[in-house]
Image 1 (cartoon, rainbow, N blue to C red):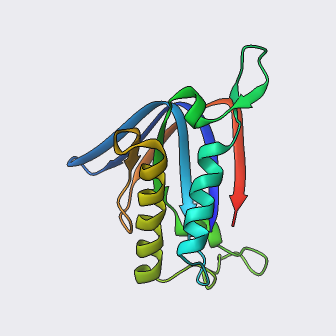
Image 2 (tube, rainbow, N blue to C red):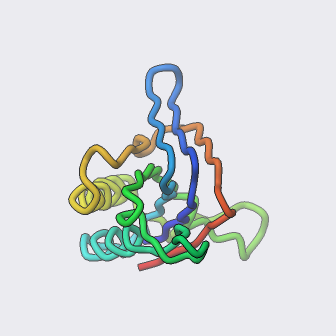
Length: 147
């Protein structure tokens, strides 16, 4: 699994006019699932991102986690994180999980996050949908985390 983790003051995902989810003060996680990933990868990645110390402490050092600041998380599926651009100009997505596995592990990741943070702290996009994502990155702090 591959996650792009961004520290944000605001994150929002919209799908048409019917679906909108928003957070303030937390992190946006863009999540890609590899074709060989498992439930174990989802669990480990969930624990890692919740405990990443990417928020400032009283000395302005990156020393506090999302748990420490009682922050929220917006999780958005993004299979394009496994796009391979090394050959030609059109990305190859052969390493990305298929829809069934991708959705299952995306949902497993969300379940794990909710177990760590609490359901009220987690917002999501919808797997496989065309989404509009707004991110107000703070720092900026952006990390790529892989399991």
